[in-house]
Image 1: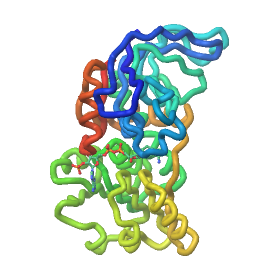
Image 2: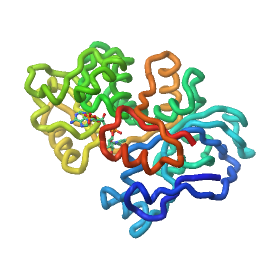
Image 3: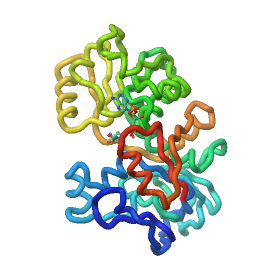
Image 4: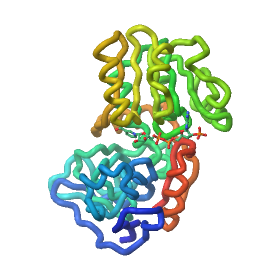
Length: 317
Ligand SMILES: NC(=O)c1ccc[n+]([C@@H]2O[C@H](COP(=O)([O-])OP(=O)(O)OC[C@H]3O[C@@H](n4cnc5c(N)ncnc54)[C@H](OP(=O)(O)O)[C@@H]3O)[C@@H](O)[C@H]2O)c1
């Protein structure tokens, strides 16, 4: 099978399409013929070992995992003897997480991984653009238990996580304000934001508005200054927080009525099934900026790494 392989950390060019042996599913696994995947922050961070700590987990001098790609949509080609929930021919999409491997024509997955049947109303390319931002936003929003009419501010509303956060908050009945650059205002409005703040012209911490939830999806806010825009008992979600923001958040949660949520997300098949339901109910739309072929994977990585993509960058395999 063809796969985009990297055997050393480095620039996008370390990714090369090569022939690898086609995998065989174990008894509890499905073999998916991957039709589409996407390039996300986790992929380019792994590729260039950024932050350096990546090397402690994924290989110090060279990567132990050679095929990236954590999300996919495709068709089940074969199933192991013990598989009960899926059958050959099922169209499925999902999130593979840190075991990666979706930049390839085939991938084996345990049937209880974060997988669901693909919604019939979207293509494989669109389906591959859902899980990364979808499960990240959902993880934090489930913990926050957003209620109807609550005021939610999403910073980075034009990114993968932010565009999902805007749509999920709307689906929970919240009043949503998205923060983005001038060029992305039409996009953020089109996915349902009630109000949009252009961060190049207005600082949300200075306009006197306050919110029940502030969700920073791209590590763009000054945490201390933003606290005054958060209502008493409000929640600040910092999904892209580094260690300093995590410690700062812990301190704020311990010493005030306001709560700060950070940390690494988790997900299950139930989350993907939940997102599927929202897509079928037309409450969650895939946001795709560009689509590349597997052969153009290095180009796709270079673009995503710049940090200005709108929603997601898909790869057709
Ligand atoms: N906690 C977890 O387990 C977890 C899971 C997944 C992802 N993450 C983190 O989430 C981050 C990536 O999120 P993502 O994939 O959603 O990002 P992304 O799609 O790459 O975000 C890019 C978007 O953010 C906008 N943006 C840039 N600067 C901004 C600013 N100052 N204010 C508002 N918008 C701004 C960009 O548009 P403009 O440049 O035009 O403004 C662009 O549309 C990574 O840091 C990753 O580590 C964490």
